[in-house]
Amino acid sequence: MSDGDRPSDSRIEEDYVKVLERLALPQAAAAQLISTETIEKKWQMIKMNKNLLADEDAAEASRFKETDRHLLLEIDTALEPSIETLSSLRSHLSTADRDWLRGFRKARGIEILVKVTGNAGGRSPRTHFAVSVMMECLECFRCLMNNIEGMNAVVKTDDAIQAITFCLDFEWKRLAQLCLEILSVTCYASEQGQSLVLSSLESLWRVRAERPYRSLVKALRDDELAGKVQIMQFINTLINETTDIEERVSLRECFMALGTLHICQQTIAKHHYAEEFKGEEGKSPVGSIAALEDDDHDEDDADAPPESRETVAEDGRTTINPSQGVMAGYAIIAKQKSAAASIAKLLGGKKTMRRWFNTDTETLKWSQKQGAQLTFEDEIKLNDIIQVTNSCHDEHVRAASQYPFEIALAGDRFLALGVDSEEARIRWITALRIARENAVSHTQNATNFRSRLGAVHFESVEETKVRIRKLTKQMEVFSCILIADRETTFMEMLDTDGASVMSLSKLIVTEAKHGGHQKMVLPLLQDLLLLPTDPEVGGRMWNEAHQAVETIAHSVSAPAEAKDAAPAEKYKDLETKIITRREGDSKSIGDQFDAQLVKNKDLRIMELEKAQSKLQNEYKEKCDAIKQLEEKLQAA
Image 1 (cartoon, rainbow, N blue to C red):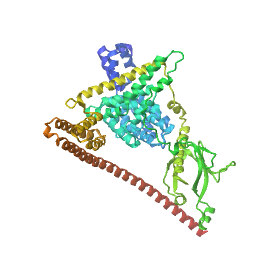
Image 2 (image 1 turned 180 degrees about the horizontal axis):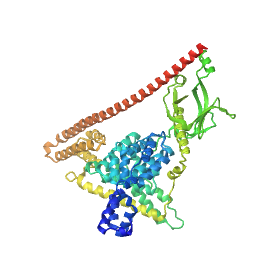
Image 3 (image 1 turned 120 degrees about the vertical axis):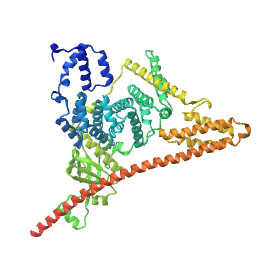
Image 4 (image 1 turned 90 degrees about the vertical axis):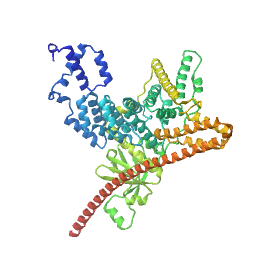
C-alpha cells in the first residue's frame, strides 16, 4: 500500500478495527487506540500490518506452522523442559495474532503448558531450575491470557488455573508476584475464573497443610512495600469479585482474623513515624519503630527438616548440605556382576558392599573408603538421573538395609542404595534430586535466570511514598466494602453483626447468662467454631444459627411466665440442628475424599502394573540371555 492508494477515512476506520482484531489486543487497549489515535496514525498502522488484511494465501505467514508444532512437541516430550525452548515459545506468544493463537490452542498448546507447569510446581524442594521453568511457563500464560479469547481458553482448560495457583511460593518473590498478577486478572475477567481461583487456593492450602491464606497474610507482613501493595490488591480482588454476600463475608472474615488491616495500618504508621524523624540530628527512629511492631506474630515455624540443614557427614569432617545438592556418606550397594562376584555368590558370600559416596557439580562417585588418598571406583553423571525414589527393586540391597532407595538412570539403568537411617535416606534423596536439577540448569546455562529471580530493587524516597499511597488506597477499598456489606448483614433487632463470629458469640453468652443457662454456652460455641469453611455449606449452617439466635432473643423478651423454659429449649434445638448438619456435611466431605483416594489408588495400581510388566520383560530377557550363555558353555 502507498499513500496514493489511501482509501477514504471511513474505510481506514474499518480496516483499523480489523487490524486490531487480528493482533488480538485486549478490548480495553483496542478501544482506547480507536478513540485516541489520529486518522494518519491509523493509516500508518494499516500499512505496517497490511499482510493481516491480505487474502488467505498472503496471511499464511502469520499462521501456526509445522515448525511451531515441532516446538510444542519438543516441549511436550522432553525429559527436562529446556528454558531456551520455553523462552522461544514465549516470544511467539507475545507477538502472535489471532490466527496463530487459534492454531496454538488446536495443537493442545495450553494442555502442554499446564503439564509442564504442574510438573515443575509439584517438585519438592524447589530449585532455581524448577522455578525458572515455572517463570517461563507463567510468562507464556500471561501472554496467552492478554485477550478475552485466550483468557476464556485457559479458564476452560482442565487444571490450568490450579497449575498456575500451585506456583504461588513467597520464598521466590518474582515467581509469587507474577503468579498473583495472573490470578488477579483471572478473578477480574470472569465469575468462572474467580471461582476457579478460590477453589485452587483451597486445594493449595490443603496440600500444604496450612491454615487458609496464612502464608498470603504472612507475606503481607514480611514482604517489601511493593509486594505488600500487590498482595493487598489481590486480596481486594478476591473479595470484591465474589458476588454472593455470604461467601464474600466469609472470605473477608478469614482475612480479618489473620490481622490483614492491622498489618497495613502498622506499615503505614511506621512509614509516617520514620518521616517525622527524618532530618533531625541525634534522633533515631529505630527504637521507636520497633515499639510499633506487632506482638501477636504467627507461631514460629517448626524446626528445619534434616534435608534443609547444613551439617557434617559421618566422618565428622566433610560438610554436607542436602538442600544445596551437597551430600556425602556411607551407603550399601549391590556388587557388580563379575566372575569374582559369581564365585562369591556360589560360596555364600556377601552380595552387597559398603562404599563411601559423595556428589560434586557433575557426578555421583563412590570409593571403597573415605580418606585423604581417595580413589573412586565408579561414577554416574547427574544429568543421566531420571528419578530418585524411596522404593527399591534390588532384593540384596533390601535385605542388607532397612532404608533403601533407588536411582533411575537413562538407558533403563537402575542404581539401588541402602543407608543406616530414615534421616540419611531423606538427605540422600533430597540432595540427589537438587544436584541433578543444578546439573541440568548448568547444562542449559540458566545462570541468567538465577540473577533474575534474585534481583533486588532499591526504591527511592518518591517511589516509597507512591507505594504507601497505593497501600493506603487498597486499605480504604477493603474497609469501604466491609462497611457496605455490614449494612446488609447487620441485624437491627439484635443490635449485632450477623456475619461476625465474635458478635454472635457475645450475643449468645449474654442471652444465656440472662436466661440462667451458662453451662450450655461452651459446647454451643464449640459447635459454632467447628462449622465447615466451605462457603455453601457454612452459609446454610450460619443461617440456621441466625434463626435460632433470633428465636432466643424473642424468647428472652417474652412474658415472665414463659421465660424459664423457652431459652433452654431453643438452645437445645440450635445445638441439635448444628450437630445434625455437621454430621451430614462430614459424611459428604468424607465421601468426596474416599472417591479421590480410590481414584489415586487406581492410578497407583496402573503405575505399579506397568512397572511390574517392565520388570517381568527385563527378567525374561535376562533369563533368555543366561540360557543362551549356558548353551554356549555346554557346547564349548
